[in-house]
Image (cartoon, rainbow, N blue to C red; front, top):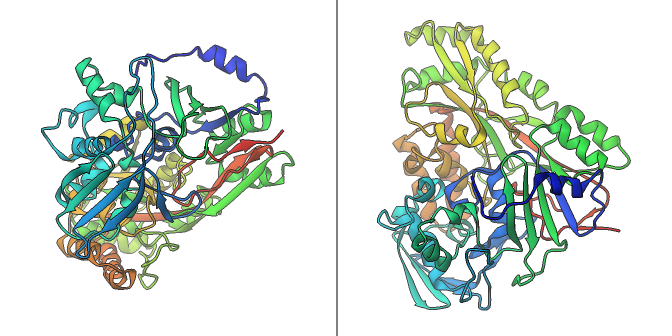
Length: 530
């Protein structure tokens, strides 16, 4: 990507020097490069950390450190008795950022809300196909069918007309894909013939404004002094992109970074023992999995998928890859989430029976690919090593595995291809604290060409999760989700691998950082002590 705003990486890193002494600049050692800066186009947490959290706001948001929904760009909202209309009352006096190409002439209003969602919904919208036009969350959450229309009542009142009640709708509006972008900026870039600038030179209303990006190296943000909420506590925020976990830790030790995520599990105890390092931890709202391409033989056969699952020694993966910082997963949602069905029985580790089951299905001399992601994620600290362990496990039942990988953005893009061979290692951290965010987004029929990397559509499962969406209370929804987990286990579109503990490593002068249960790294409330 080429951006109009550029800085010299050498000058920037030179300014950082051997330490980050300036109390006005917070440096975060991030694990990878963002795919872009328009969060509606993507699903990766790495991208959201660099885009939706510092640069944008949403109609509703989650109070940092919780799954509590609070007002943001909408000061309040009303849901009709039948659940079919949601009216948002918008905050006044909210200003968008500016850059060398654009200076806003007005404050945020209803036009920006309508532009943000209609570009994702309407095929004939001029921005629908820009920058790849893959609206994975919007499509995967059945939003095109759910949102019938969006009406502007006046500049600060907007109404969403729905085709059915949707229990998690207000929480969904707090998710990253719902970040509000400027309609005026969109129009200006369209007129200039550069609509891709919405993704490459982002304009939002968030606590920080975008300044510069050098791919695979550094992102720089400045505090938004016109921010409508509590201002950021530091003048500048810098993402020092550092894929290697050991190098990230070295940079924190040397004072070159203040905060980093996803440490090597083997290093965690040493970090805890170090006097000048602070380690925060929290049980993650996540799951790591191996998704089979259920549209391709022999993985279109549930008996084959269950047989392969029985060949995976998940305890060995927990011991070797997670180093004790994870637990075996049996369900597609984490055990800390409401409606978790603990009565589900996990696949047993039984290579002998796995071989018998494959033979019974006529599967012999199977050659398969396992895709291993190139970056660390909270649900998988070392995908390559996990794939190698699976390769060894599958060899014991006569299955030959080729491990493949790509650069992170390409990995995510290619993994959506319907003719992808074999199975892919991926995972998920919850976005809104609702089971729908796992079961519908990752396994629902509407997500087959987007976030559902198993390309799985099973009608008995689909009927349950769709029915659960429209019910108003957790008590009514919970039995349906519990039953859906039983069907998931029987059909085995994934091998569920692990739920992890999330660790954050930082210097002692970092003040105010909160581990967010939804996985994001949020820095506007973080300061540095003298």
